[in-house]
Each structure stands twice: as structure tokens, then as C-alpha cells.
Image 1: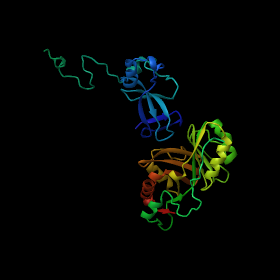
Image 2: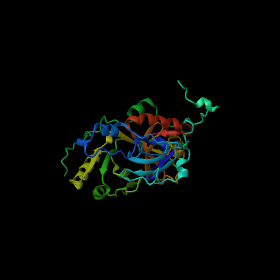
Image 3: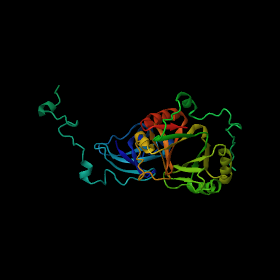
Image 4: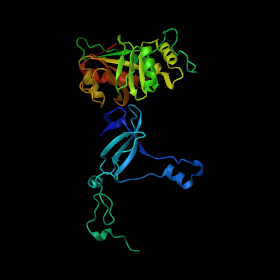
Length: 130
Length: 210
């Protein structure tokens, strides 16, 4: 179980008190009348699926019931920081040192992206030529 | 005065009033294990509970005038008046729980509304929705440790603190208004479950109920 710091309660609580609510910092189109269907679709349905640093919206549902943001590494599950609604993250994928950014993120080589599923022979990895 | 229709939902006569644990009392026989029980469970039935929401600065003065205590501004703090009858607890940055003796909640609600005037706030009478259990005895801490994932060690949980957290498979507000006992504010719908959970958890230490 994780201990997650709630920025409103200002203390660490058990993970079971929290619920994730998806990607954070989604800005609603400012001018709905002139927004294209494509932009609406992107806003409503399409979410990032980051491997590495990801900013997420969480709610302290058993507790103060406030929403807040978590910056989290989706590969290592490390929580870098939590911050209140309306604040900007201090840790982002851009400003994190390269070594930390890469930690736990397995770079895809030779087409295999599944962790621990490296083939015994490289020839098995070739796509069949039809 | 805000433009809100108020009504007193407490009947004039307390005859027939049933606490949230009425059903449990019929189904669980009272426990009295003789001398030296480790845990005492006692219900404070039919108290007045008010949920107060709004900005801290707006509410503070009205609360001081009406309740005789300041609004707790630190997270998880509980303030009580000198007699200990009226308490106000921090629930979230814009929400507080006021617990007053049964029957006073309607007049206190009206006084708060009057003091707050046209400010942006909300008061909801939740007296029927929750009840208060007191846990005391030398093994009360052990029972809490079995029941919640929150750290209830006296160093982490000093007197005057109260938190909303998980309790068993339900949720409860755990409070420590005084050195010698703990309070649980439990929801009506969880009351029977939590009561039976407490009886079960404290059975090994010996438990009395009243």
C-alpha cells in the first residue's frame, strides 16, 4: 500500500482512502461555439497514456473529499509530489533529471516492448514476411 | 438573514425517538463481563449534528459568537467550549462538523444563519444521519488499532484531534476529545455494522455496553 500525502489534510494517508480520477490539467475549450468536432473529441475522449511522468487527478474520498493532483511515474509507481487544485506541478517530465526520468522505463529495443519477454533468438522477433 | 426556509425536524416529544443503533440493541444482548472490562462502549444518542460549510474567515466570527469557541483552522483540530458540551471539528478546508446537545441544534442553526446574514455558506442538519459512540477503557486503543489503518498512537493522535478515515470496511470519524476516551462519529447506515465490529473486536478484552 502507498502512503499518499493529501495537500489539504497535510499528512500522509493510506492509499485505500483515495481514488484516482484520470488525467489532470484538462482544459475545456474556451470558445465552445467555434470549437471543431475534432477538438471536442480530443477534450472529451482522448487521454495521454504516458510511460513515465504523468500528472493525475485524485480524490481523497474517505477524508476531506477534496480533489488534488499527483505527479506519478507510471512505470515505477513512484509518487513525485502531490499539489492542490489550481497549482502547477514542480516536477514535470521536462525538468526531471534524465537519470530519474529513465529509471524504470524500459527502452524499447528490437520491437519488443513487453518487460521480461525478450526472445531467446532474435530471429523469432522478426515479423513474418507474407 | 438568509432567504432559507428552516424547519425543526426534531419532534416536540422525544417519545418514540430511536437512535441509529436501536435495531442493534434489540439484536445484540447488552455485554457486562463482570469486573475490570478492558473496553467500555457507550452511545451518545440523539445529539444535534450540523454540517457547516463556507470560508473560514466568514464563519469564524459567527461561530465564536454562537458556540463560544473559535473555528478550528488547522486540519483535524477539534475545539470545544469550556463545558465540553459543544464541539466543532475540522472536516475539510471548507467544512466543519458541529456537535451540540440534542434539541439545541435548531436554535443554534437559526442563530448561525442570523449571524452570517447574506454571506456565502451552508448549514445542514445531519442529526438523523449519524450518531456518536464513546470508547473508553485501557484496551480501547487496541480495539482502534485493529479497526483502522490510521495511526492512533498517542504521539500521532494527540488530544483534540479528529480524522475521517476507514473503520473496518466502513468509514467513521475518529475523535479524541479527552485523554481518557475516544469518540466515533458513525453514519446511520454503518451503525449496526460498526457496533457489531466493535463488540467482536473488544470481546477478547472484556466489554461493557451502555
